[in-house]
Image (cartoon, rainbow, N blue to C red; front, side, top):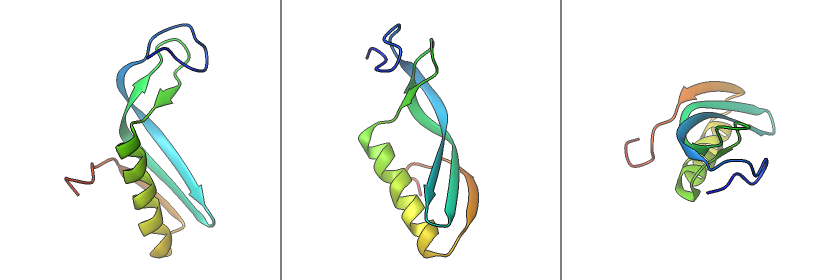
Length: 78
C-alpha cells in the first residue's frame, strides 16, 4: 500500500509503538504489528489490531489505571 501521508513509498511489514489516551489513562503499547512507510515512518495497523488495542485501553481505563506501558499481545494469545 502506498503511504497516505508522504505518498513517496510503499509501506512494509514492521512494528510500531502506539500511545492511546482516554480520560485519565495514558497507555503505551510497544511492538504493535503494522505496515510502516520507510520514507516518513507513518504506521498503519490492521482493523483487528486496532480493535485489540482499543479493547485493552477500555479494560485498563475500567480498572482505574492512569499510566501503563506494555508489549503488544494479540487478543487470541492473551
